[in-house]
Image (tube, rainbow, N blue to C red; front, side, top):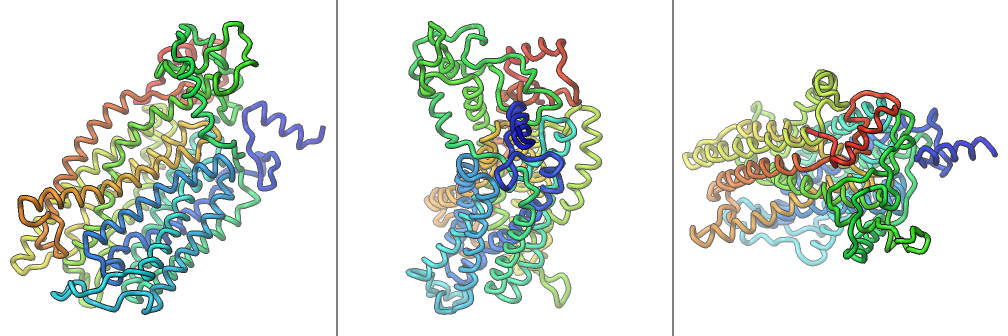
Length: 607
């Protein structure tokens, strides 16, 4: 047997089937690690730079150039951003099932690039846009909004960008994280560091987009702005391709939905059978994972039995004669297969609790930008801040705060909690959700003061709305990174991209909820006040502060809801055993009872 064949056998025995760019078994001394992940981080930074420059200033373009009313323009933006994140599920599915992360990123990266180019072309030719018109003048009702082929080109380009970016996002995270073997202690710490580095790259991309690129859009026009976004995307794709020979890639595993469907079909088929009290009698069960959970095992390919959702255990009940060969996969499933379905069900409440958080984010990219337009934007007599650049304020803070979090807070917390990442991912999410409430409190107070000043012919400086961005930026550092780390850690090989995509799907539902809330609030409030809170193009006539107060109340209720579900949630012992101990060691005979107890109790404490 040749060396490559021996390596393949060893990797299959350890549960690791990673491959290199040619499809051959990877070599740990040549593939993976931070030297490979850095190229993925390059794509993360430049792709975020490109998409953020478009998304964060899109409402200005839709309002001023496409001539859509303010509330409709806000919904176009939130629907676009929501679609970006919803399509991440498609990218995750294609990657895990058929294409692999690298191929998926390459294909949809070029689709996104084409979308940017098409936006540039439309912005360049006046005949592809409605006639120029001042939407803030008293004659704004006579402005023609984009219709027909002009609207078709705009929405085609916009949603090509959405399709490309959406399918890229979960794979950027999963491909980078796949470069680290998370079950080895040192690599587990590096994985946590990688997630913080990915967020740092995200912040750098956002910062450049919201300062340099938004300034270019404001002073040179959107045609140049869209062109620069296309150039940034091109550089990002070059970064991705440059690391081709170094990547450690996961093999596609076929449709990820088939095993899930098999569990439900088998459980329903055997619904009248009684689940055995002894988990060892379930098909494919194992209570002591000496081969799968150890310092030398790079991955986990099987899961231990837990007690939640016992109905699904019926899918693992063996034939009375003990002959499993007679039963099809649609009538008999393994314990590990059932446990992955249990995890998917269990993470849904955690996922749902982050939707309101992203609804708040939607306001900072729409109505808060419009707030800035009506304020004094001068820093000096000759320099004005573009309103969309206000969103850069938290990222300026975060490029200093994220390294401090990784180098100071995490080591200190690790000594106390004995957790690799300092605090658990669920704790990190909860802290962020709590802080986000105060972003809307600040926004409501400032908007009330801004409107009162405007009615007295006074103009507040634009820096009054900076606190709402700063507070949310701090909350995002906790929630966004914690959620990505949580979803990635809760999946087996073959479902990592899809489960990571659920993080971005939360953004999608948050932005869609924003559109729904705007429409619903307008409908309800217009019925008794003669005009909705957000029904006018003039914020001085609207009641945006009341809408912010509503979001603050919803955010606080959502936080307490999250506390309940985070205490209810428990990790599968197979996924958390090494991390919970906080230090590497071979599993000894004395550990066996601990594993059994963890399985019986259905949890390893995460709080």
